[in-house]
Image 1: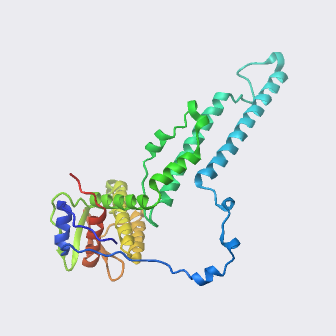
Image 2: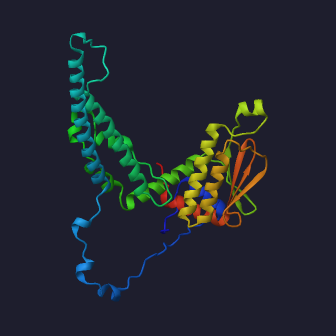
Image 3: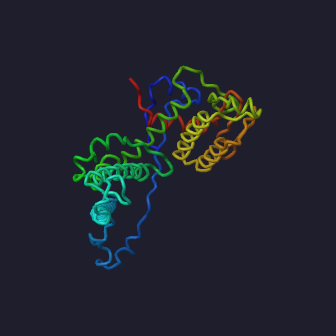
Length: 324
């Protein structure tokens, strides 16, 4: 974690006051591997050198190869399809009726529309891959797919210019390196602020060394009336799941791996359609209850232990953008 300046937003000031932070800063951990130089010098130079031909192909290059292969196969099949249809016409001869056939023509228009559809799917897959490759491990990154669509259109008029290599190069230049990781953490910070609604001026409650954050929940009316069971409504399950995800990702940033895993486990518990809400039930997560979730039929309380709350504040001060 890098040293940061205290944010001036009302939300962060409120949270910092609650956890007792007064301009605290955290120095970054220097995690560097030592290289045995003597052993390296013993390796012959010819072995150390990596020929350019051995460089693994990029995601774009691999999809480009698949694209060329698919297009050639499709066009060859279209030609074969037309020949088959022509042969059928010969068989039918004078009995030919345009509505009676066993085979269809595959026109150049059909080929173009199919290629357009496949190109759009390739573009989506490359964006999805970039979101995984350029994000910190175990953290989600959202890339604007519309921007990629507009920059690299794949409609019928310019299908010949479709180039997966160019798309991947753009994604790599824009989201590779530190930028993609920073953007992912910024998105996590905004997600936390949004899911817990702490910028609305609500007072942060402290109870027995824990910061108390609340999330309203609502139950499925049908389950409650028909089966007399207190189950979370579908939309509420999704909302609670997102809240747990952002907390889990912040725990990972804080090197609290056990806490991150436990929050994922609780996510699966609450997302299970057989789960029934029990009032005042406690669900601890992490070492010695770093986070405790207390469930009620109208709300969930997220109790965040003071030491984790302090790291949470530092995280928000680092990545939460100050709004004008």
